[in-house]
Length: 167
Image 1 (tube, rainbow, N blue to C red):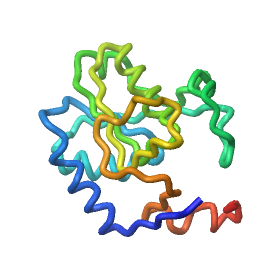
Image 2 (image 1 turned 120 degrees about the vertical axis):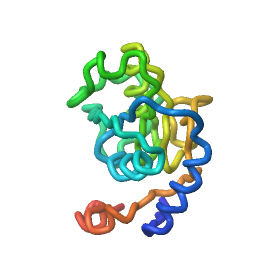
Image 3 (image 1 turned 120 degrees about the horizontal axis):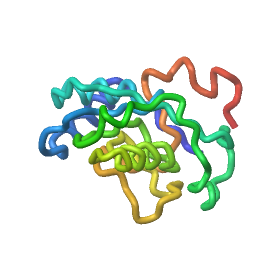
Image 4 (image 1 turned 90 degrees about the horizontal axis):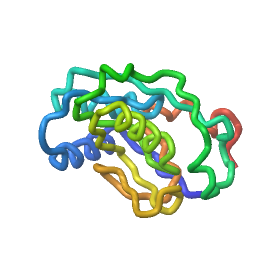
């Protein structure tokens, strides 16, 4: 898989591309850990969203390099951290992550927000339609489409190459 190594200037351009797409006022933002923390903070500042919440979700079968299978979209997630329903009910919520690869994390978080009575809209820096488990479903907002392995500037010294796991 080809890599795409981004600089902070690249990230600034992606944020600058996203901000004008996002219309109206959001009551809150749910940032998906860990990937969504930096882009979520940048977007919260740019959009003046001060009500920030965190969601941490894990699919136990996930591991780097695992094959993509359509039935994986039905795997049962473990919510390590998630806002109480009363914090999102009746609110327009921007759900932020860095990349939509398979889409499971952001789709699962948005679904849980919807079930709690919130109105989620999803936002990522990069969308990978070729590996998505949800054909026909896209992020509400995204800055770029890619099929590459994206390395963000905050990951440069912590990626698979440093850990010796790059294939």
